Length: 264
Image (tube, rainbow, N blue to C red; front, side):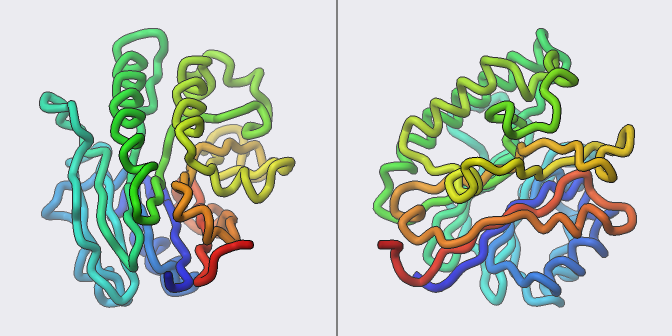
């Protein structure tokens, strides 16, 4: 395997944040990028602009809502799946998968689920069940696999500045956390938490009450690695500087580095 930097970034509107995205790509030069919340129809995806800075791309768009994409530096991702199995009546663009640079990458945007209880939370849990079922096969793959995206789950109280303020939110509900733990129990490695088991690291700061300025954040953007991928995990982090740019997304890019040699 070559040395790879793989990132996930909820862009929160790719047309509105395109200057921020291009600046980040040129500065950090990730090899693979999973984007969520494109909020753009397929015809409005900025493939030419991304190609101009060296990135091939595939995308699964949806006007005004949802939408996911996979970018590859100096390469074209080879799409292997669009949408999760079991959702014939699901019109949301939330999952895209591709082989790129020797790794199978699944890009996902898990439903938010608010308000809860209610149909949106039920949809979140049903979608999570579909992901769990499908991920079981990926975890056992004989290829390195990374499942990256906005999971809309705060796994533990260490992953949020103050859980009391979010107790009724779908991101912290026991059912959401249980689903995430069931994924990990399949044998997936939560890369950031694996390398930093005791640190408070955030990937999302909402636009209200100066949460960015106060570092009142949540960790909801995750990169999960199957055993063949986790054997090469060497670094992980968050490019928090992107959240401080003009007109930013409320998320920051979260990334891992897979080294060219296995960890001993």
